[in-house]
Image 1 (cartoon, helix red, strand yellow):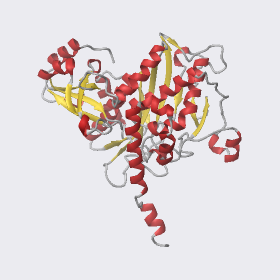
Image 2 (cartoon, helix red, strand yellow):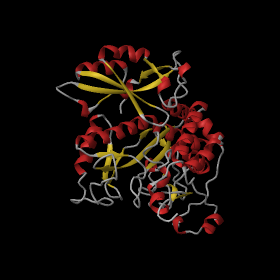
Image 3 (cartoon, rainbow, N blue to C red):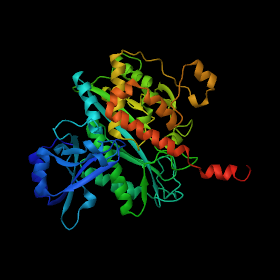
Amino acid sequence: MTTKDKDYVMRQVKEKNVRFIRCWFTDVLGMLKSFSISPSELEGALDEGMGFDGSSIEGFARIEESDMVAKPDPSTFAILPWRAQNGMNVARLFCDILTPEGEPYAGDPRYALKRQLDEAADMGLTFYVGPELEYFYFRRPEGVPEILDRGGYFDQTAMDVASDLRRDTILALEEMGIPVEYSHHEVAPSQHEIDLRYSEALTMADTAMTYRLTVKQIALKHGVYATFMPKPLFGENGSGMHVHQSLFRGDENAFFDADDQYYLSEMGKSYIAGLLKYAREMCIVVAQWVNSYKRLIPGYEAPVYISWARRNRSALIRVPMYKPGKPQATRMEFRCPDPACNPYLAFAVMLAAGLRGIKEKLELDDPIEEDIFEMSDAERRKRGIDSLPGSLGEAVSLAENSTFLKEALGDHIFEKFISNKKIEWDLYRIQVSSYELEKYLPIL
């Protein structure tokens, strides 16, 4: 997206006959929040922000500290193509959340990412990401999921009935200035992916939120339901959000070294080593739901073993070899996040881990190109290959004692996030599932 200022936004609102402006932000869980203002209120909102009750937003303020201010960021202005009606348009602006004193609010996920980006900027670096968000189409949101097709990876046949859905979604994204690289059917039945062109991380976090809503809105227009739930179908691949990432110093890729056998600089290697070191502690942020850990099991293309590779897709981190030796294409791919996470917090903790690796001058072990899924437990232990937490409960235990995670998120978000995840895990543990009833009721 191009940089926009206040005057540009005001002109566009007038010229495009924008009748409502939706102000967007997220709570700590990444749930999109929105309120509308009229064009007459826009200038004041851009200058001073709009007040709201923060005590009603998950992870924000306590009731005695509830006054918050949402200040729209003019660089995020876009017209929502699915909302146009009778020549009138609706636009959106992402907001930064401020205190009544005008200071950044510590509970704002967008601010958490900005803090890490500022740390990278102090080192002369810009953080670029390219997430691959997978999702499913179903007939309806309730009951047993009913798939639209039985297609597989890259299928282009009559089975891929969602081609029109993907096409309309891409057209809507491009109308909002969001460039798309390609789209395709994914491995599981009724599973799809639209890949976004990489960009600076804050822009991409805003884009990821827009992408998720756009996919859902276009699906609803076609009378179906789209979900980013990590694992909706038993026995099939879940939906991931592999995140390609790199650091640039100006126009130069700081991860690239033409003389290295892997084309990786020392900075790139230390960055990867940082993500490997802190992967278990930050897993709760990039895979934040109970259902996330139904996806993160061996097999089903979900990486659970903490290692890196170039060709091996069973590794947690991969350095893609699509264009070996090309400076601009050198990047690493973190494969455990899922598309239901909060992208602001996910990008923040990934960058924080990588920067720690650089500052600590961590060394990167040799890549593991063998299929780790096929290794025995003894062989993995011998080679020092650890695994991600196997449940949200285990992830909570690792995270709540993590100094790294607390520093990366800030005290406020850390405490609110952990508290919410403990409640979610406790509520899940006390449920009696249909599996238990079917298996145990007849025999016990």
